[in-house]
Image (cartoon, rainbow, N blue to C red; front, side):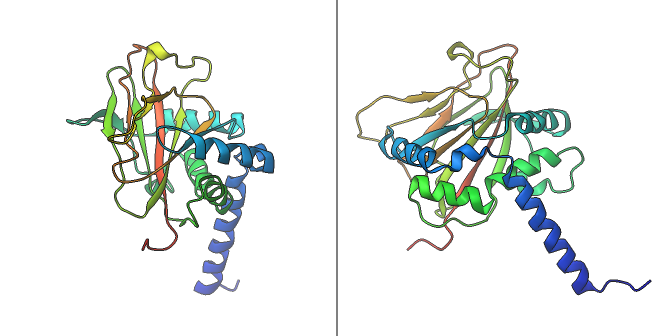
Length: 242
């Protein structure tokens, strides 16, 4: 039998990756791409305080998201990191999990987040301009005592929009008494209180990244028996900022 040349193998791999990207985009609910949903999200983002943000609820096909959560909890290696600014179990950077056993559903969610379709949606909602396909995404597991102190995560300067996807047991939702909330702080000198967003199942939080003006934190988890896995990352500008 005739062997396939390197060019043929490369073309086959490109075709496979294209098919995988197309499939991964299907993890999102079609509803979030509808014009009315986009207009609503855009209005909420622009009018939010203390700085632009929006919560996309019902973002994914719930069954697919549950598979992602199960795969992550069962297959992800995470080490406790305790510093002056945070305490959490750090999992792998999601750009490094291709080929990792049992993490296929997690990679599929990552690919969905960075798919052309979702990046275009984020650009439309936030007005941030074209976004790069660069993957910049980390995973962190928070249980009792874990937290992340206020910071802006604005470096490198190409970061335009941050996202946060909370994964946890949907049968045991978080309450205000449990902690683990995303906290958004007003910029220095600006009046207003801290906005607190509880982890919500099947949601994606988007918020603006701006040096000194997008300060955020994860409040300490107070529950003795609840755990949340945050997939968090950034969308980068497609071209260098002037």
